[in-house]
Image 1 (spheres, rainbow, N blue to C red):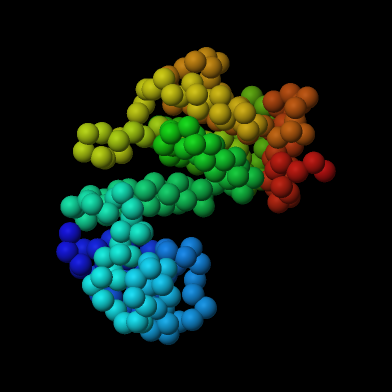
Image 2 (image 1 turned 120 degrees about the vertical axis):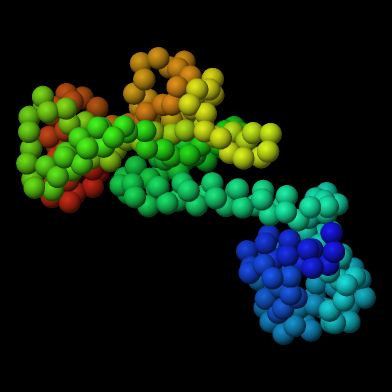
Length: 255
């Protein structure tokens, strides 16, 4: 790996524009990665001198190949011997893509359910399980969902036999397990023994797994039943959810 590649790798890790050019922003990024804090001095000479002191090399405050080499090794540690910047970029891009994908879906979800979805993704990651929020509705189900949304927007409430559920108020979501194949690409697993573990994790934080088989290896469907509805019939809960939706009241709050 040449110096330009090392600079690009540092810029990528620091979240900077990747151009291989050692600018003031690059030195600030290096400082941030080494000190885990932004510098109070933003002059380039002062920044470089502080970095050189941190790396325990001659602190002359001037950019040098030696300073960049030492900074690269200090930042990447055991990864510093990699010969492929492309491999590193791919790995970081995949991680960022995973986060961006879920963040995009989370922005479209009702605010009440977002903390639960985030927590499930987080605790699953601690178990080494990569989760993504997914939409598993078939086309005909999507059409039904659109009609339900239309009915809600027109303030039409049909009785409990209409098949309204927590899904129609956004208090439900599906989650999928993704695993890397031999080329490092993330692949969706529609069947996995880990889904049983995910179901347990979801229920541990207050979600309800819709599957009656808690050892199922298929994609789980989670619902968030409000705590105030614990003793209510399903039809009673739906009517109250509809009222809250209509009056713009938090769907989970005790009132």
